Image (tube, rainbow, N blue to C red; front, side):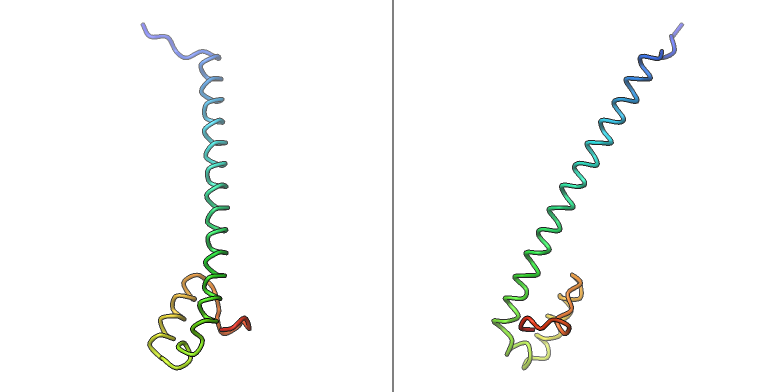
Amino acid sequence: MRRRPGIGGLQKAAASRDQYRLLGENVAKIRTDLMKEQLTTFRSQLEDFARKHKNNIRKNPAFRSQFHEMCAKIGADPLASNKGF
């Protein structure tokens, strides 16, 4: 006959679940922080790009359309910014 898990087994299982939950939360926080850092870097590079290619953005409608579409995907509004857009 098979024995049922005792209190010790239940406590180990609960402790194990808590450890995995904490590990998952830590990994999620690290990934979120890394993504925020990457997005900040991308936005600053996008601003530099816009400053360097301001004339092309203004003169070429196809290029301007693609640029605005890319900005919209990351949540940047080049029309609201006065940093060279």
